[in-house]
Length: 241
Image 1 (cartoon, helix red, strand yellow):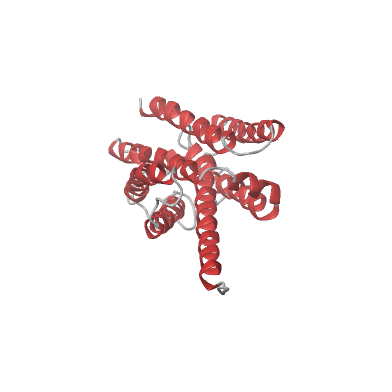
Image 2 (cartoon, one colour):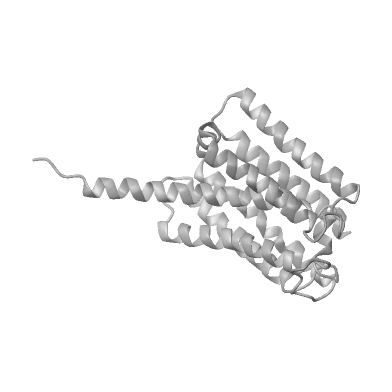
């Protein structure tokens, strides 16, 4: 039952994230089509590999296959963000409220807690990843509402939320890797570890969603830094008589 509900929920989240982040970008129709095609192809690839057992323990040696997928998708996003002006401009055209708002889906980190209660996911990974996502998602809702009107989001609050949300994701990935049985860095040994995160539908979290949310935090951080630089230049500009 958990897997069925998780498949539906995670499928909706993946589709909604793509619809918001690509659909609201101020780019051409052809560019949107290409972006949707890339996102769909990666999702299809991950689901197909998982269905064939490609994320099972030991299939990629000492490093969990889900971690490799996470690194590949994140590296692709970072390479595009830092290396392509067109990609960065497209991502930069997405409204701030949307970048914050998609993180509200992380409330469904509740699923990690349910998997732990079902004996399928170990602590401390389940607790940290679950509650961290829940807090990030809950806080994203009022922040996104405030961000609809420029200048209404308290800068300090947004910085704190953005840092917490990004660190929560990185911490979850690290703890997930350290909880994976059969790896040389398996130091969090409570059974059953994070084996569930290498199976459908849960593998879509590290392999698809986490890299996307990290890129949203990167973009939000870049906008905060840009706004700070603009404010500093304005304040230091010499006044003319």
